[in-house]
Image (tube, rainbow, N blue to C red; front, side, top):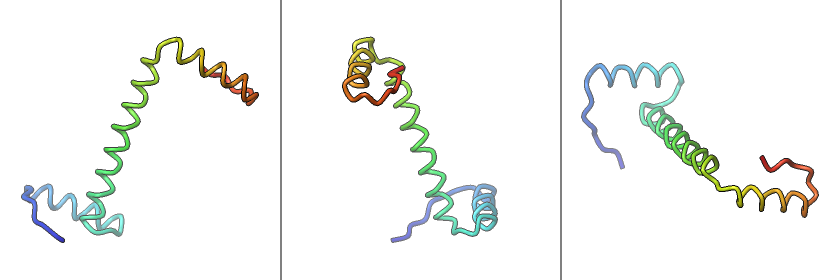
Length: 75
């Protein structure tokens, strides 16, 4: 199902220009841009979670590395 969204003429022209350059529809361009934006937000959230992990998490990770003998460094 298609719908209409209101955007300025300048934005509409930018979307259409960039879509044409990439050889995709305006909808596909917007979807790809939104997918990329959402992925960056998920990765940023993941990074914050990893940076805020307490030392016991890293100790457990290191213990699993030894148990699994994968030779990886937990940090």
